[in-house]
Structures are given as C-alpha cells and as structure tokens.
Length: 327
Figure 1 (cartoon, rainbow, N blue to C red):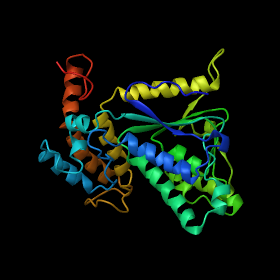
Figure 2: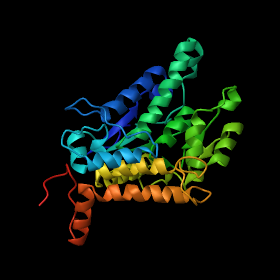
Figure 3: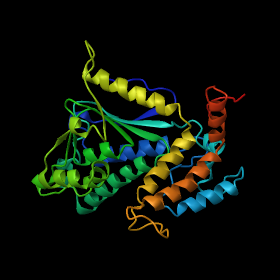
Figure 4: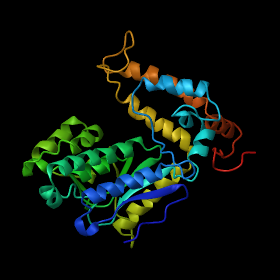
C-alpha cells in the first residue's frame, strides 16, 4: 500500500523490506542512516546539520554564538540560534520527517538469520550502526514522526520509540522486547523503551519478553482507533499522521529544532548529576528550570520569536524565516 502524500516541508524516511518484515539487516541500517543524513545535509553546501550533543554546558556556547553572530556562521552551531541563518543553511531540507514502513510489520528488529552468520566484526558493526541510526533520529533538527503501522519488535521497538512523536494504531500494533526468551536480552532496545515508558514497564518487558499493545501506551504514544464507516485502520492512521505533520510543518523550524535540543537536554538534569545549583531540589527541577530560563532568553532573541509575538499582537498569521516574504 502506498504511503500518503505529505505536506510541503515534510519527507519520509522508510523501511523498504516488507517481505523480510522490515528487519534491520546491515543493508537496511545503512539505508536508514543514509536517508537520515541526506535529510539533514545542505544541498548547497554539503554540510550535515545536526543538533549539538545533549549536554547542558553547551548552552554557553550557543549563547556566545548568538552574541557573536556574523554572516559567515563561524561557530559550528551558529545556524541553530538564528532563524534567518537556519533558513539559509537548511534551504531545501524538510522541517518534519516521517519514519514509516510498509505493512504488515513495522519492524521485526535485527535480521537474526543474517546476524547468526556474520563474523564477529560485522556483528559489532551491526549494533554500532543501529546506535548511530537512533542517534541521528534524536539529533535531527527536523522533528521525526513515527508512523507505527504494525508490530514493533526488539530493535524495531527501539526505532519506533526513538522517534519524537510516535503514532500507532490501536489494533495490531504491539511493542515487544523478546530477546530474553532467545538468550539475547534486548539491552540496547530497552534504552529507548525505558526513557519513553519508564523503568518499571520497560524492565518488565525486558525480563519477561511480554508484549504491550498500543492501547496500553496511550499516555506516551498517540493511539489511533479505526475510522468510522468505510474508513479502515490504515486510512485512520494516515489521517492522524498527515494532520500531525501539517501542524508541525506550520511551526518555526528553527525554534522547533532549538526546542527539541533543549527538551532532551533538560531531561538529563536529574539532581544527581549535571549542573549543580546551590539549594537545588532533589529531583533536579530547579536546575532544569534555571537552565531552561536561559534557553527561553535565547528563544526570545530569534527573528522568528519576534515575528511570532508581533503576529499575535497584530492578529495575523506569522511568516517564519524561509516561509515567504514578510511585510
């Protein structure tokens, strides 16, 4: 079944081997990596533009990059702190990506037949490459929507839950970490599952190899139910995906990217490590709130923030940098 047409400024990243249950073979992992890099590489400069590492101390560098901003983009991440520079550097690149697969299985995880026959060096390469793909999704300035259209198993579960905004159908979509039953615990996939679902549920899935239905995850995954009348579940899923993409694509791409970096960075401030603030609260909230206050100041200095506030006060639609001519 063909995938629906996406709005402007959006593009697909696809799993292309439904006959093999979209297993993550070496070839499929290379394909995903190449697609993600292409979607984030400037067609004019050839420069790959990814979010900075999610380290709180890098905020000082971004603040300095903005204060010393020049047209030659001397700092590696200058493009991230200016909406105008962002639009210039990422001209022609999508602001939203949709990770999708052809049914009936979203992704069955690693290709066990291939994995069983690979030499040790290529086994290591398989898992290294898988980690790189997950990192590219997380560090993509383009928000990544997951169109989860069937079972997501092992590394396929990791792939689905690594996306920024996973959307799954209630019927037929299940998440599973079956490795323990095979003598190969899903220690890598559970890194994404624990961060999305919490340690308790994730460890249960890891230890028992029991699956979880999309219906049970409605608090962390957007769950779609079958449409009314003649609309089938695929159509209902696609309608939700396209609607979400349209909404995301209408936002400021630069501010969305900066917000993504800030969100995942502040999430690491737990109070046990990271930035130390005198009198900080035990769960790290004070550290995170004070750090994010600096991010808000950086947000507010962006051309798109000024445009958004002006548009709100003037009761008109905002025109973000790169979206057209401002009046």
